[in-house]
Length: 110
Image 1: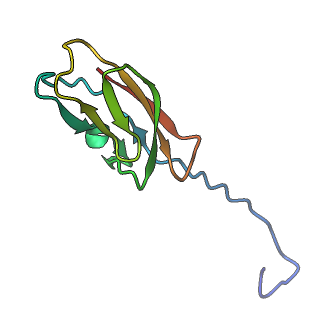
Image 2 (image 1 turned 45 degrees about the horizontal axis):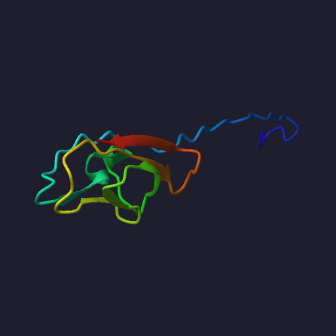
């Protein structure tokens, strides 16, 4: 509003675009000795806003898994039990942004 001429007004529109966080679930090519077994965390190479992804920022969902490995979706921990037969085992998982459920990315562990 013009203080000298209160009738002199104009409107404007401001558009603000809020982008979702950068969410990247990277494939995990892992080798574990089946005789000894072992474990690793799928979040170790995944990012959220260019920083390491955490379970406080993303939800992990198991999409598929081969018999012979286990997956804890609350932590991201994949476990191969001692004495597991040699072979290729595959797990596919999805990360979902805890703020924006439409923001997802999938990855495969082999």
